[in-house]
Image 1 (cartoon, rainbow, N blue to C red):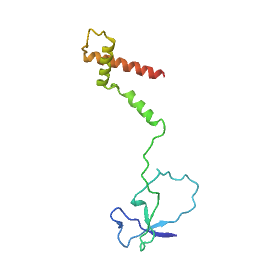
Image 2: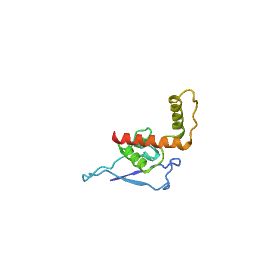
Image 3: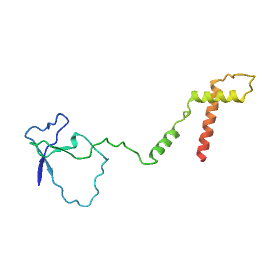
Length: 143
């Protein structure tokens, strides 16, 4: 047994099939015991509204209203993806300018007060940063 159902499109509620065309919707039948299809959660939109009686033009929403849920990965999936990404890259992970500031500040605090401010070559700061990041990576590998 089939009933006639028309669904409005986004363009003002008129169907693109024409005035006399109608879609038929089959009634539910007993299933064979297979798996039910997976749904992604709350789905809202104009497509989710069906008109049962065109003369009354009453809209019945199929699902509750509200914003669509943001996609979330399973726990650990993003962590594994980040591990693969950072194992492929060879660039430095600490920003250069903040690291340079820390190095200069530590050098001022450790050095004697009569010497004053040191001048640093960029290659010296880069060598310190490479060594510091290698140390931290080795430290986290053992943890």
